[in-house]
Length: 148
Length: 276
Image 1 (spheres, each protein chain N blue to C red):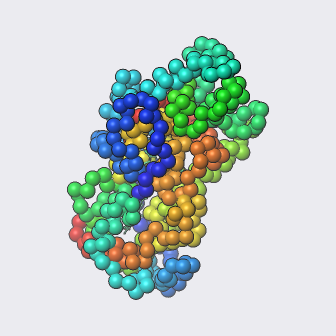
Image 2: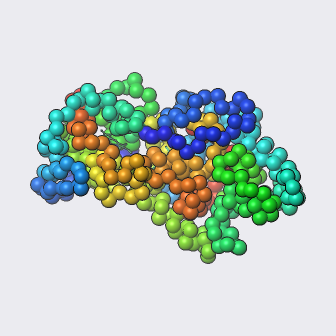
């Protein structure tokens, strides 16, 4: 099993700003992106749908979600149950936007990044895997998962 | 994830085989298989794809009467002796007693063609014989004929260890394949290595990730309801990480195939395999 994020050793430029060409900009503070992308308001119900959806988020390909009745859940990343207790919204946001900022070797895909990717299939080229609104929806949902 | 749009047409020529809808999502199979939890293997030790199958699927693979891919092997055996239209000769006219003369051949592919210096896989060699020696039009990738002949020839090496050459003229191809394997790619930014070295034995949806040895191909995949080539499997992995899908027989996948075959050195050929 992969180890959890090594937060203690995370080296992030405090207050560093990151700009992706067409994407909403965001500021990193510590190991978090405290402010919602584009000041958008997330919707937890839509976020739950995205997490399960096999075309959009497809998070359960790697993670176990909160619903044990969902068939075929992966065990590559940590379970998502309780993630809202382990991490605050800003920390979750950063891990969705680009988990490689915390762990350069991470297997967790960058969901809000278009740069420094290779051989991206044409339909996806230049686009982030999730839009700013979708990221906020998923953050809202994950933040509600406080119990194990 | 996305659909494996790679191929949906082949093999209506064996009636009754296409019993379920094609085009299911990448990792979803209608068949529920019980997969035993596997311990993470030692890093350097590469295991065959069969070691990651459910016991039931492994039994089915081994049973010639229950592994559908043996239909393709049979068709291939038949095609091998069939004289093509016109002047051309049957394969067997040049390759008498294939059980003996072509035993072990598949263990040495891909290999550099002495004439052209190009890397050829088994499919490529068959097509070369077809065009240059039989004077017939090429079958084309993923045609029932090419899949059958490939499955038949590979089946003649069943149980024999893979032993491709990676030195001399093969070196640049090997290096290119290795670099491809190790490079992160696609919108999901994953390398082959991250899954097929780092995550072996773990669950990606319903699949247990193997070393990606590929020694069972052409294989019958339940998700395809069909036999497909190794390159079709590679296209599915590329699509899975939302990376460019190269053409069947493309130089990128040929080089990758050589690298995979070298990683699988010593593992027995298992064609025709069965996979989820």
